[in-house]
Length: 351
Ligand SMILES: NC(=O)c1ccc[n+]([C@@H]2O[C@H](COP(=O)([O-])OP(=O)(O)OC[C@H]3O[C@@H](n4cnc5c(N)ncnc54)[C@H](O)[C@@H]3O)[C@@H](O)[C@H]2O)c1
Image (tube, rainbow, N blue to C red; front, side, top):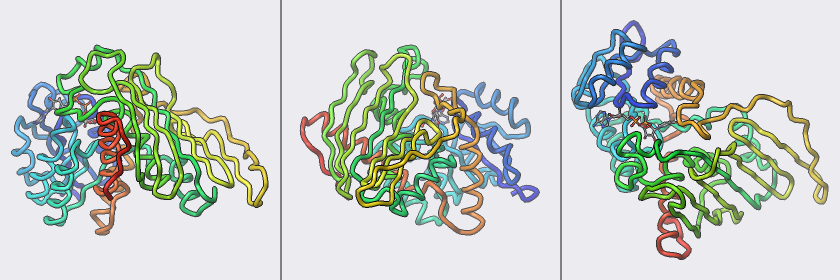
């Protein structure tokens, strides 16, 4: 802590690292104490632009050891997250970890164990949960506003060029990206879908690389059965051109809510047993797009909220908005989708 502010150490200064630095400096109780990248120019340019005083490191273990670092922001390729989280937890540091929290369940379980054992907080980043409209939907569904849920669908159609996949050697690989259209991009919408609808019991899926030259999927479809008995579908892609606003459709016995990107675009509910749901008028607000066709088209608000939320969890010894356990759920579902596509059969989720 310096002058009552938490010192953040950012590991990984590529695309998303600078968002963390900007969000950290926008929050009153935080500052960037250190930055790290195996490519020193990246750490230097992030530091020069957003955190001049920050120490610069090439080895993340040195950043973690730095006493000025209270909280570590993990912004490295997805398959490296667990080793960095475990090292940070063992050094007694709190952690803000980019999505996906990691790409394999056994690694995720080890990192969550390390945070529990060392009594440090870990918060996952899923910035769409921080939006006002997402929270309105979550509250409505938790209160049973739509009655028995029957369908929960997510349409997550992004555009990513072949050049995007060649822009860093981990992109589109099983080893470090852990998958493609679902594990990297669609995971934002899948996390929301699970948050709104609850856990999935069974999936049946198809997935493949239809247009990009990559090992992982650029296109996937999955049929879902939720534990609450509802059905659903997921369509995820990075192969469509030019990409569409991501859309979640939530249907219950008493109504329908549709959520596009960051806004509710339909809210129709009835309270009568056999009544037809009435549409509420929706103010035509600008929808903030989140990286549908451009990976850098990301708002800052969500990361600011995540940082404020983690600091509050540390100060009150409470839970962050996205706990490690809840960040695990989307990875578990996506891995089950991949398993189903590989095996050509239904896959049941284990817990
Ligand atoms: N929340 C979001 O909207 C969002 C957006 C983009 C990326 N992400 C996530 O952030 C993570 C990083 O993605 P990105 O697009 O910024 O990737 P990137 O390739 O642009 O940046 C990753 C950086 O990590 C560095 N790095 C690699 N290994 C390292 C190591 N051992 N020690 C220190 N630095 C190391 C690389 O040199 C690179 O600069 C991924 O998990 C991704 O899913 C989240």
